[in-house]
Amino acid sequence: MDITQYLNRPWINGTQDCWALVRDFYRNEFGIELPQIIVDAKNPLAVRRAFSDPENLKHWQPIDKPEHGCLVFFASKVRPSHVAIYLDEQGGKYLHSYVGAGSVCESVFDADTSGFHSPRYYRHISLG
Image 1: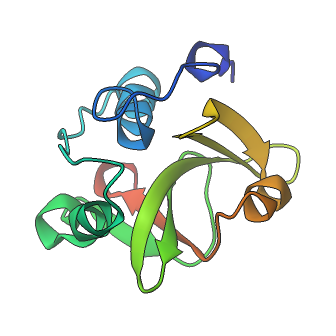
Image 2: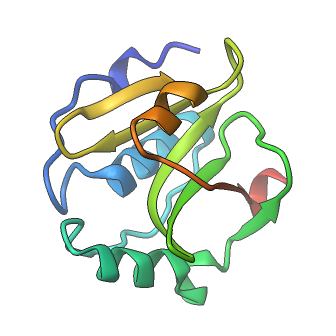
């Protein structure tokens, strides 16, 4: 899989943030049009509420182990505060976009070192 089209994009709040990257990836790689989640990504409480809203999660099912292309929600306290895409290569990588880095692909270890902890994995119901 060539992910170069997703890398090195600047992070822009509300238009080119972590959810926008997920939407682009799912549209291009799986042909799935995900809904837009409009939230001020600089407001952690608003992000946690949006990513734990049952309406926004109704097309996702939790899975115990990561699978290629699944969503990865990282928790801040109890609710998710950031989302990435799991890529099953080289021991596992996360494709994601965040403030100060833009869109990157980094190892699971490097993401943990960067402060992205407590991953939870979700599969889109159409990919089940």
